[in-house]
Length: 76
Image (cartoon, rainbow, N blue to C red; front, top):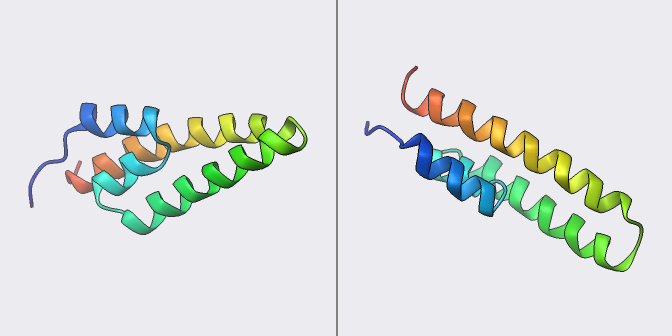
């Protein structure tokens, strides 16, 4: 098993929530998180601003989950 670079995973996750998790190896979780953020952003454009606030919380969770997934992938 090769080591997953934490810096690359975090940059990907900062730009695209969830895809850093997919990069670390948990593709299903990463794509679900990414899809959720996309849907919430679309809803936030057309409806209440609460969806944008939820998106920020999910983005923060995505950063934390990316760190955890990289640690798991690297066996740490």
